[in-house]
Image 1 (cartoon, helix red, strand yellow):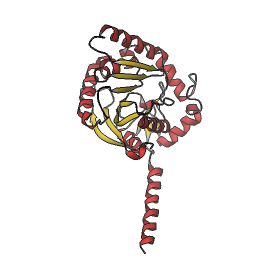
Image 2 (image 1 turned 90 degrees about the vertical axis):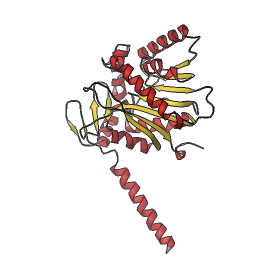
Image 3 (image 1 turned 180 degrees about the vertical axis):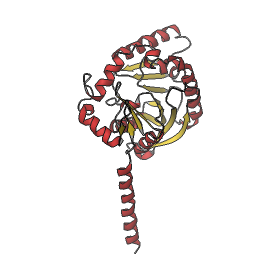
Length: 292
């Protein structure tokens, strides 16, 4: 009888898991022109068939190629990478700094003499220059657009030369897209992902988080700062730069699928009303996420 109960429970649990997997990623969305999209699952299937998964490094076509072309044409400045809203940078940095400091007790990496952060979708190095370099011994920047990563290199190398006596932060630069980038194992205390994860398909999002889990030092954390879709829309597509703005619920579901525990979540304050709501997420990989 006890064995039968266990079997029934197991079957029921599997049914629930299957039902959840079938129900997940079915968020309704909207295209840039207001066209209703029935589900995120169907949207990503269409995108992949259109070439997003065929050759991630193809810079001339497909989902990722369009994004590379768009950002290659953007001015390599803070205002350029923030779409004309460069003036929000100080407010953004102040909130990010406070969020990182508040989450710091949860970052339990062994020893703190040498700390290392990864800046994902680094652009011209704004987040590193104005924020991360003040908190870590070393920062690695990953960015696929050559003009932007070269501007980041120029800015940060010049900054380090001017402030070498007071700021000895070391920098490394990787010109590579997130869908192929693999962080070195057990390297980072913090991986900071801001205003870039919307370029990844759901599958590449999950794959990237799995690689990031391996790239974190034991006790390290991932921080995501991202726009949120609202008004009942699970996601909003921007076909100009090949990105999606996911809702808070959609992002949280992906974090859960990636097997990350949410340590903290906070909404950005004092941004212009015309911008999307922005939230910050502090995440830790569950033990089962990590390879032995």
